[in-house]
View 1 (tube, rainbow, N blue to C red):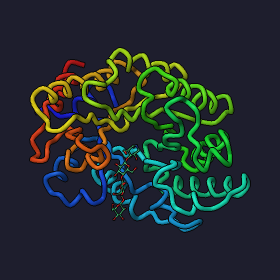
View 2 (cartoon, helix red, strand yellow):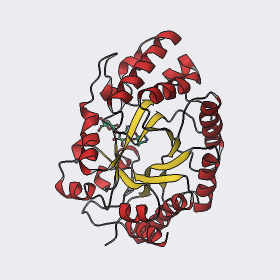
View 3 (cartoon, protein in one colour):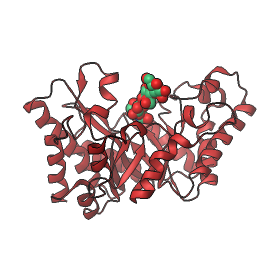
View 4 (cartoon, rainbow, N blue to C red):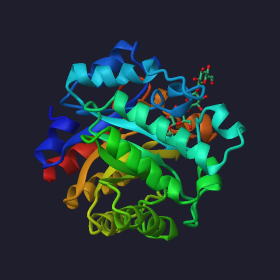
Length: 322
Ligand code: G3I
């Protein structure tokens, strides 16, 4: 039967991919699906490239966790999205604990981005350079970087990434920017336009797309929002798609979930500058959702027993029609 990545490529996109994590790779049934490039043409490491693993102490770098998924992607000839260089969460303790001034934090930030991006240079199709810098009201999140450096930290991070890895597409990645509103406007104005005005390279915006069944923005709204970004001269990608429901899953919430997946995949297919779709893992037992949202789950495309959700077949249908 026709599969996700195969059909996505036929529809003119670069990939249909998934996030995965080191501990998941020993599950042989999971692994067979993950390694099947007709199903998944792209991988994102869900954790291994994050700051706390890569630079646990100032100037001490460890690339072993992040290399596991990176090397698997190379071996399988899957596109690699690298995630992420700068984020307020899963930061090493020393970054949040230290008292910084502009000078020494700038140096630490440049060193982190430079060492990490050069390590995987040439292997990453794209880098999520800065992740989740904005609050829902569009203001900048008050994390260590913003507190000490102001908006300029965005520029510093993208400049260092561009210098360290000229091959990777450089992305800003966030959630709740998949539809019109203050956060999407801020991403357009204060990230994309700001960098372009400053002469700093940004190639894309990642729309995470962690949605809730029945509350997903309409396909038209998602298309309009994607075009607001692509009109600024950047690509967009669906980077972390999952659509959670109130457990237990039943016929009706799974039917709605299928429609909701179709809206997001359909929107990407409609927009020329949308390069690909990544789900934030494909197997419910490996989803981050139940651990964070009590009573919610079944957000992925495969159930615990490895049968597929109705949404899987819904996505296949949309891809076939493209
Ligand atoms: O590494 C430790 C391990 O040493 C320890 O024994 C274990 C015990 O809990 O925890 C391990 O860390 C966990 C880590 O995943 C690696 O498995 C953290 O507790 C856990 O919080 C962490 O969750 C990740 C989450 O980001 C953290 O914010 C999820 O796996 C990951 O899927 C999720 O991904 C994020 C994206 O990066 C950004 N967008 C939102 C998305 C979902 O939250």
